[in-house]
Image (cartoon, rainbow, N blue to C red; front, side):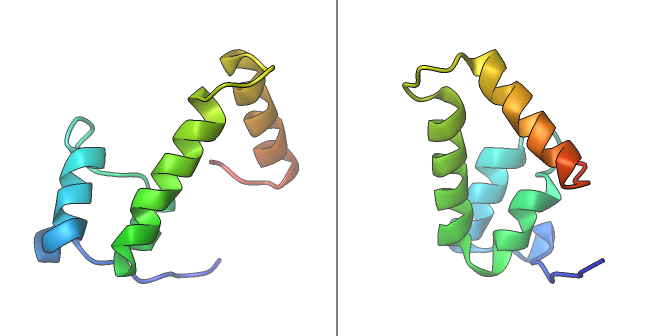
Length: 81
């Protein structure tokens, strides 16, 4: 398994601190899939924007269909996300 370094919550400053607060305040932290972007906070922000657009933006697929596709692809890739 790969190890990707990340900035701990208590060491985050500036944009990263804002994003940690915005994306993790309600749940007590953010998922590792986002946290790996901590060395490049703009990529974290852009990841969330892209994900939100793909899952909630205009599409001929319903939200449920998109979630089912995501789960199927994750399962096929042996990914627990």
